[in-house]
Length: 381
Image 1 (cartoon, rainbow, N blue to C red):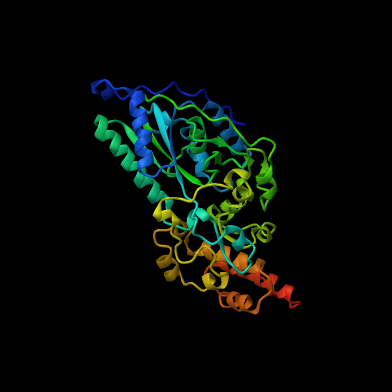
Image 2: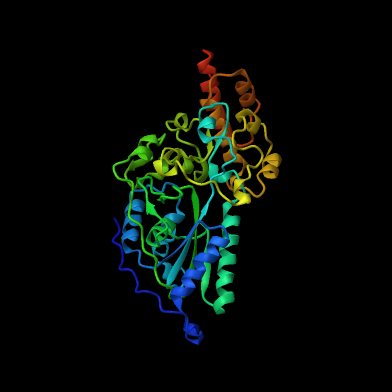
């Protein structure tokens, strides 16, 4: 492991901060929490900038190569674990939780148990969370400015090198579960996290104690064995990584394990006891299911043209992976489905797809479908 450099001292306040009127920072923190609730956030916390222990764990993870092709994880280096290096002058990080579980969607387990249906991670069924979360955080930041005047701040929504789970845990929004996601008693893990880096000397909120105990349900449920131990994940085996982050070919030995999951994976969350009573989101943009993607048929989605994909994924996080990876993922799911002449026909219709990546996965899927029927598979080009 590359030795972790000593973290820098806490950032100095913005030099303009001395011009601010005296503040009751504890009272302001309480108002920020109240404004957050009004904006639909499930919880608001305040963390400091000391993340030395988390930085050491991050470097270990990177040195082990468990980030796969996510080169940006290493490229940003220490800035990920040092808020004041990312945004000079940062003294505190306001953390926010936004619940996303779409209560009106088709039950997740029903979709996973239907091999002809396409499983899309529940967080991606509504509007792109980057837009929803960022907009509400910006409103919260503006409310603070209305109260105290201009101040140094920057909003983040999974859009920069931020250790959001570590910051959320330090601010008391929950604790890190064995699947590495944040957990809390009242909302499980079905929520997004966002941050406001600020130069305001707000009082810190106390962290929560962990409540996973001896439970290993998430580890046992991972289809690909990506959770290699408690609090340890190998992204290279994670279905969310394979279907979203990975740009090239999905390793052949892992393809059968993806089942019908075409965008992300929720298995470790679905079995978590803390998610049994997680509330449905109160945010309309997140609760609405777009284009029937809570259980659409694989053959239907595979027949989309790129133009249709662009049209029907407008405003969705799914558009970020592009049509090529979307097609690749569906081809794998079709290969994992029970033998069906309709699936064979759908795959053959795209056997000459312009994309070499898609053609490769179609060939593999056709081989699986035809082998299940006792017919010889197509020759690999």
